[in-house]
Image 1 (cartoon, helix red, strand yellow):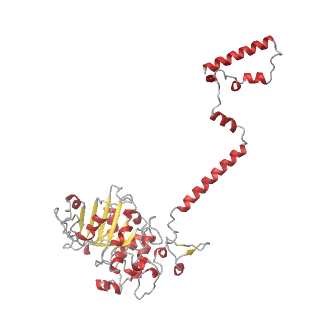
Image 2 (cartoon, one colour):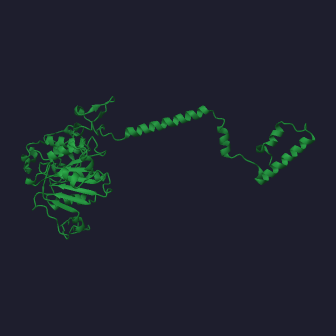
Image 3 (tube, one colour):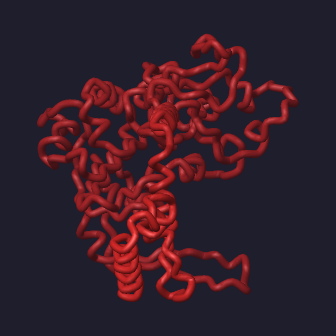
Length: 399
């Protein structure tokens, strides 16, 4: 830089001297202008001093000569692109009241809506939106259809429902199989098998371990080795509180700290097997509390009945920010409680996931003594589950 300035000053001095001696010798023409312009200075004799325009300077100089209308057009194009992007993103977000079905058949138009393009959109805010379609994909007695549908012949896990709940996929209501698909297809001898529920757990889609308070409400605990054990083993959440309700004082018993179960998997001698399951640790038992009361829709000291809604919202003071999983198997008392819950918009916000065995009368369940539930049919049970989902409950039929 100093070299260039020195050369420039020398040339200016020489030029001024030439002008003072002979003003006509050097005109204000191209030579003079070229001399006064450092970008055209002849520095070839001193390569290090030769000035060069940078790429940025050239770009700025070129931009100054661009028509402003071109800039306006570019800005408008970018704004238009941003608007289209925002619109498409919002259009693709989950709409709880209008979600497309996963499959269509003509018989389902009575429950659906047709768009201009003929695509059926279900009203997922209604009971009808969550009801099963015509049971053409279910294996019914006397059916001889040879349609290539794997769910008719092979699938232990049911199809996804047409409508999402809480923004997530959930299993279709499988009422023809009494909500016990594996047992109905004779894949398992246990009528209470829960294999078909496992892929659809909300805990598989949402990390329910994030809240500090994580509560399991087991309404109808039966024995320790039934539902309480299942949730502690199989549900992907480490519960900080477990509230067990069992009216029979002789039925539910907490195990001792050194409690062990016989595993007995001796089929493959080459595998690494354990004879006994890990013992139940004391700290896990300490998280559990047993209530020998009758779970009800209202308080009644004369019958030892507890208003479970009041207990959850007031006594336990459960909030939407907590993780709350509820399992309900209370031999018919679920009908009045669930109707009250559907009338309270706060309950589906508090309860993250609900498992409920809805009792009804149907000849296929007579072998299990369900004739006593004659006030409700299987269709009533299906509509109740659909109504719960339409109100925002992520609910499964508990087997």
